[in-house]
Length: 100
Image 1 (tube, rainbow, N blue to C red):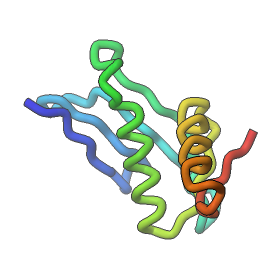
Image 2: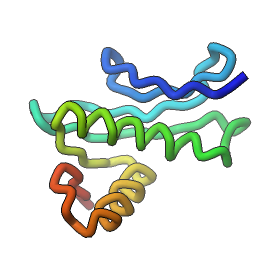
Image 3: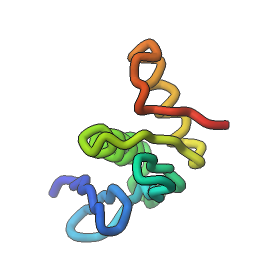
């Protein structure tokens, strides 16, 4: 059985499931019509070390880009990922904002 990463817009989160059991989330709030703030990322300790948290944050990044939303993060883990993504694109990704 594989781990499924699903974007659940109605719950403002990307969620990871294993055998239909929730094992991880990356949650965000919409603070303006065009801005999503990632507020929490968590993975069940039994499933840590499998890059699930990274996949969850990446799913929110992907969906934000498709919906033309800017991203910020209060979640420290997501903030780290957003900083890495912004650096990868050499600052060209104006949709990713890193706040401190």
